[in-house]
Image (tube, rainbow, N blue to C red; front, side, top):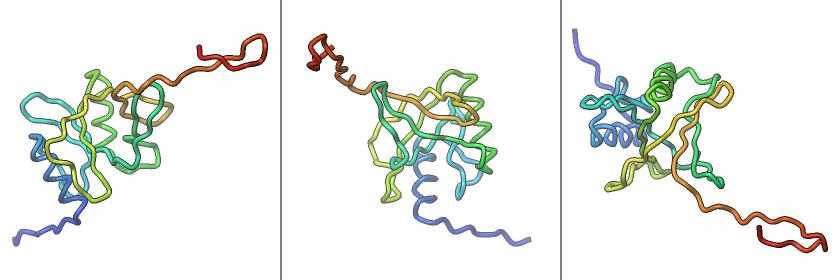
Length: 139
């Protein structure tokens, strides 16, 4: 039986190289967006930088939603929730994971039927409240 060669698009190839660089062997290099690092069992996610949202409590990005057919990511999300932590790296529009960038320490949370990665601590927004005179004052 002849072996089949699977050609990866730029984004998938960059993602597969990044997983390899971080010691994660993925099941499907062309498709996998998550994997488990062999030496310590840590779940690692590739996070698309364009999907990152920031708020007063840090950063977040969707990892899995019900309309997704990615059962591997769903299993990894569930495993990360049980473990209490995971790691991840950002993939940018130019299809590259930036070399030398540190891994993100993630907390995976279930929000409704979705799973999200949360990390970091953003600068707190200055809250404003109205004084009795109607002027805004910094809280």
